[in-house]
Image (cartoon, rainbow, N blue to C red; front, side, top):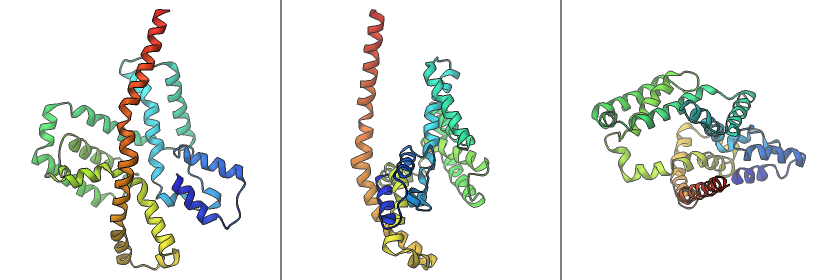
Length: 271
């Protein structure tokens, strides 16, 4: 978000500024992980394209987290009413802002994978050559016959199948197990978030909009190939110094929260 705001400021600093209140509200919507939209900042049309629109997935992730109390209720647990209220609020917001609830099937596929990998028979099949042939065939079929997964459910189900088999241990003839693949997997989220910014900076500030629009497809892809090592290097740094330290702190933070909760419960029991 800091990089996005910086780029917007560079592009709009010499133009007429919008009211401060409007800029603050629009900025807060962006900081809200796009749950409340991704408005154009300070009148810059297509602000979301600076980051290739990748933040569209975040509201769905937050909705999944906020829907967990209902899942707990269905599985026989009794979550506090306040958490069920948050779920109801999340459903209301999603309906109000027109989000697609059918993407929930993808999260259900992830839950199915977590369930299946607990069974030895499934994991034994997942690592077999037959499973690898299925993964390759399904991926090739999906790419060849479905230009997008957003309009039909069939490609989503096919990709869920691939996801389950990979989660079960399939490595595509060992390709996913090599050191480079594992490193790229660790950096995947950084690549997802930052590739749009690098592309935008390259074609907007290095080449210029006019020159970039005149590139041939071959020249365009040549530029993309040349800047890919830069993206990998930057994402390696962001993973090492931002993502990985945060992930390592999860256990300690969770332990602290549970300890505080246990102290509170013990105090209530004593009273």
